Image (cartoon, rainbow, N blue to C red; front, side, top):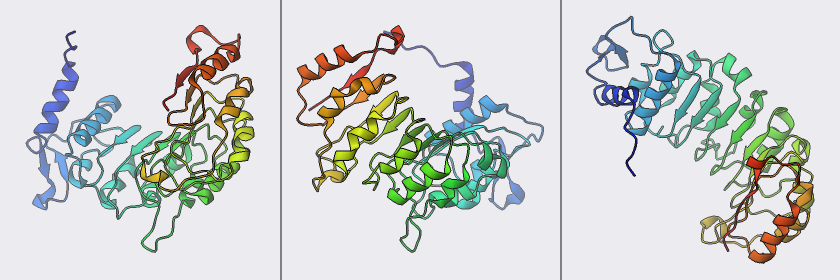
Length: 307
């Protein structure tokens, strides 16, 4: 089957990214930042965000190219930077000039913490940002302390992804206490060992990712999960060959979770990959008998299970 051709807009953005130096000037030949040669250039939001993603994907994004996203010429609302290793705090301060509702910044330089990233955001963004993804970054300061207090400033945050970071139990307490709008949380491969702080937001959580967590309160796990009546997506999978599982952790009774499946009437996605002591045939029968009749046709539960 033939692939659909790229849109003209995407082709143009690819060309621009490949010739970014030719359509810009170094400010006063100091090599401090790039500026558009035509000072009347203005890219609307969608084009601005796509150009940022293309530069990031091609690993052309650095302090100089990030300066192109001056609010006089561009507008950013949904920011996605997946290769941020070449960007320093100086470049990240460009984000302060925009009103950002969705921010995804991954693979920052090891010298830059998530707290410093949040410090580069403007006041409007701090008060209004809805979605934050800082996967595979660091919360640890030079003094080796894990500091997550800056997250408490994001009072309207609905979605938070801190997977593959040093995020810990204290951090979980902070976000559950200080983020009253939090609905979607990904703490996969973090240092969280006790999810009991989720009691504070169990009645509003819709998505919860706990991939490769080494939980120590296995007996409390199932009752807490089953109390999340609005939960739609749940990932409690693990990778037995992953470094996170060098040391065996206490076992959570996933089989018991299945027996109480009706306690999660809105669940449409469940990932149990890597879980032991679960019979696949029993699993299918249990799910088939537990699907609520009130579900819409397009909300058939999606099960992922690999032993």
